[in-house]
Image 1 (tube, rainbow, N blue to C red):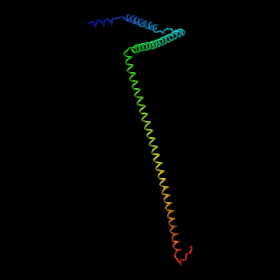
Image 2: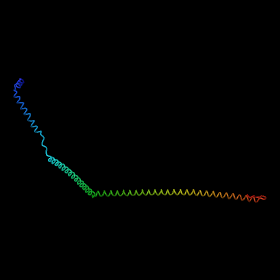
Image 3: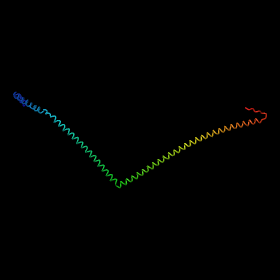
Image 4: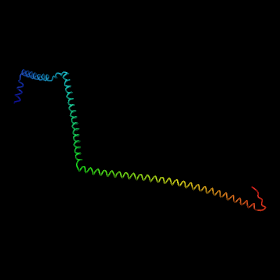
Length: 202
C-alpha cells in the first residue's frame, strides 16, 4: 500500500515543480565547478630574481653544511691524534716507572747476563769453527804438496832408471865391441905365430 501511494504522488507531481527542481540542481551543479575552476588555477609564477635568490641560498646552505662536516672531521682527527699522544705518553711513563722497580732491574740484569753468555758461546763456537776450517785447509794443502812431491819423486826415479838403463846398455855395447876386438887381435897373433903361414891382408 505504501508503494502504491508513493507512485501516485510521483505521478501527480506537476511539471512546473519538476522544471524548478532541475534548474536548482543545475545551478547547484554549476556552482561547485566554478569554485573548482577557481581553485585549480595555477599560481602566478615567481619572478626569476627570487628563484635565483632561493638557489643561491640553497647553495650557501649546502656549502655551509659541507664546511661544518669538514670541520667536524678535522676536529675528530685532531682529537684522535691527541688521544694517541696521550696514550703513548701514558704508556711511556708506565714503562719508565716499571723499569725503575727493583724486580724489573733484577730481571734485566739476569737477561743481560744470559745474553752475554749466549753471545760469548756463539763467539767461541764461531772461533772453533774457523779454527777447524783453517786446520782442514792446512791439512788439504799439506796433502796436496805431499802428493805433488811424490809425483815429482816418481818422475825423477823413472828418469834415473831410464838413464841408468841406457848407460848400462851403452856400457854393454862398448864391452862387447872391445871383447870382439880383443878376440880378433888374439886371432891375428895366433896366425902370425904359425910357421909357413902367409898372411894376406884383407
